[in-house]
Image (cartoon, rainbow, N blue to C red):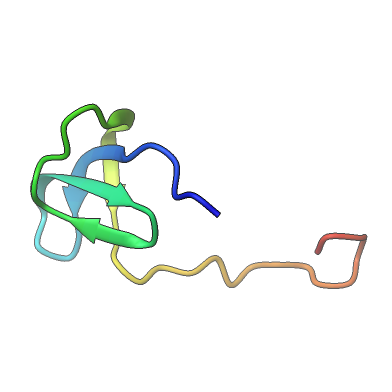
Length: 63
């Protein structure tokens, strides 16, 4: 399986409250610019390690 194009995100990284750019390449996150990356978010908040734990497993197929 290929990773696809790199993605670019710009937002306020919490808890430090610093505006940063980051790139998603496959299953990795980097602060080094990736040429040709597609910007998917420009604003908002970035919280490393956040997991959506509010999931209704079993209510319907697919969770």
